[in-house]
Image 1 (cartoon, helix red, strand yellow):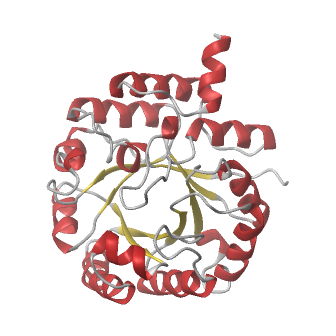
Image 2 (image 1 turned 180 degrees about the vertical axis):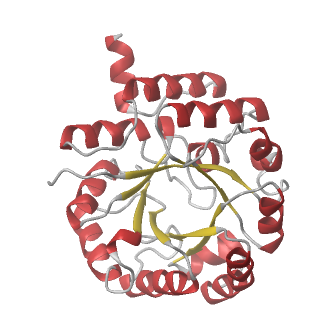
Image 3 (image 1 turned 60 degrees about the vertical axis):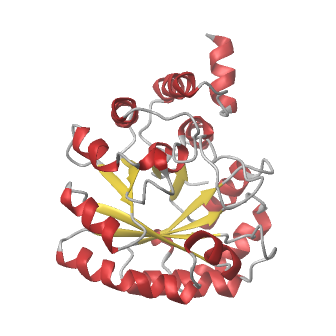
Length: 299
């Protein structure tokens, strides 16, 4: 595999923490983000401007964004579900947001209480305001390789949603295997089809590790030419609307894989492992990174 640079989008502070039962203080969230940046991560999804009633852990999104000592050339992005969320993000100076839909009608109804078409229509006003305010927009497509409610998901549905988001103005489309059922062969088939609608350099992957396939699937995506990988420190995260879905692939494990392939990520693995153990200690839970566990035993 040719040596190249890969962009890691660290989603731990948002996707990783949002479903944790242990409430984490604003100060710890800010420290987590700043530690991750100091370890070399240049793209950190830092907050979610959703209703605190639905996601209590993200109720301090504005305070978190205000608390970060933002460094130049670092992307501190935030997830927004609607125009109200976008306005709140804009108020605290967020320069990149993420919006989300799904390739499964059943999942979209459970997650956003609307159809795929309705979810995409809701984003039109956000896209217009983002363009007017020079805010970049990233698009997530969930359930690209399977759905907890409808089972298999047609590749054509993934292509359609990805194409729509890209044509709306999303500069990057992150393909999410929400329940972690994908395999390398299916990943390659999927990316081959999505590339017909979205250029390869605008495609990212977001794999959960429910069936221990995330790293294998990332390798397959790299072979196809993908250069953007979403991951979460210590493997934090999951999906509240997907029963049995385990966490995201651990950033430590991804960096170890990339290092072994001679691919640059700019991340200090030793420092990252320490961050993973630190945040797991704050949460009172076991670190899900296999690399993190192995390196701890060696130290």
